[in-house]
Image (cartoon, rainbow, N blue to C red; front, top):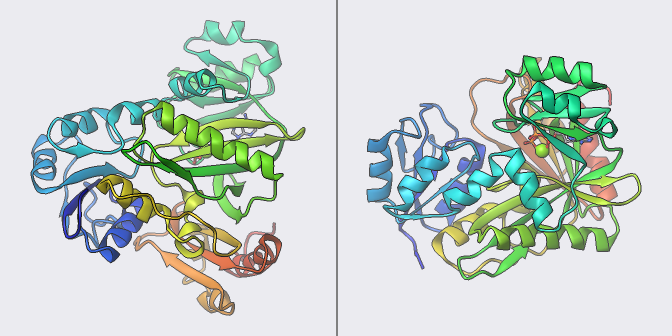
Amino acid sequence: MIFPDAMLGMLGGGQLGRMFTLAAHSMGYRVTVLDPDPLSPAGAIADVHLKAAYQDVEALQQLADSCAAVTTEFENVPAESLRWLANHCTVRPGGDAVAVAQDRIREKAFFRAAGLGVAPYAVIESDDDLVHAPKTLFPGILKRARFGYDGKGQARVADVEEARKAFKAMGAESCVLEQRIELQCEISAVVARGADGLGRSFPVAENRHRDGILDVSIVPARVPGDLAKLAEEWALRVAARLEYCGVLAVEFFVTRDGQLLANEMAPRPHNSGHYTIDACATSQFEQQVRTLCGLPLGDTRLLSPVVMVNLLGEAWQHGQPQWERVFLAPEAKLHLYGKHEARAGRKMGHFTMLGAGADAALQKALIARSALYPDWND
Ligand code: ATP
Ligand code: MG
């Protein structure tokens, strides 16, 4: 086990790295962040900030020399860098597991092989693949296999013609064409698995998106108990089959007829798990510290129903948001990530709202949310 005040390494300096750093600091660890951005949210509070590219061998060497173990906060960190580091120090999760999550084609095949349900899809590598794709996949969504996030690199397509145009517009890179599913709701399971192979899930969150970006997470998810259990089981199964060490999130669709389908995974803590900071015995970021350091997993029990609301750049459209409207509720907790520029769609922070039940928390959260987004009328 790695104990405080060891130095831990983090590849990536975004908000996830920042919340990891906060959790690590409160446990007495030190953190070195590698991120080229001099203003990165995690770099700003880390003990050491290496401002270099993720492939910079000198920086990787420094990370390996100075850190007891290294992890990552975003899935597009070059798997090669993780593999290089693994030859020099402890790296969790490993580059091979991260590589599966980086590629939708590998990810979907992996889900299927593990016995998880997935939306009907076809791998698209050429125009020809589109022409031969089953017509039942339309209306569909064409998704780039790599480097998509927050709904980017995706196009809704009604038929083959639209799909061909979209494929061309995306640079004819490898894609998957997925049938558009009629959703009852979306849920996610964040799990952690230790080096000893023991896994534990956080309570499943119910997620609402707006323009392809997570907007609100509601916990506990308002789905049948056996469905939530199945989602946890599937996520833990994926972690086990990847021989994963760390925190892993799996996103699911719940179809109109109540079926569970695995959508995608993230080899790191997840936006839909931010509620754990204020509402669980252990947060997903503390769990990340624990798995990285080989400590036993913390208790994941939910202490209170909770709703998390994302704060995007739009909330700054008319200057400083009206924070007093959030703080009106004593159960509200504000988390800002220290980003200097508020752009539309950029995740600037979040707040959580505790409540007696999920519906009560949601009602209060939506009131505060409407004050922060005066231009949104939904
Ligand atoms: P993330 O920010 O989660 O990484 P992403 O850009 O990688 O997002 P997805 O999670 O695949 O992309 O899709 C974003 C959202 O688009 C989903 O949460 C869902 O609301 C909607 N969506 C994606 N695929 C489908 C589908 N096959 N049928 C219906 N809706 C879908
Ligand atoms: Mg997603």
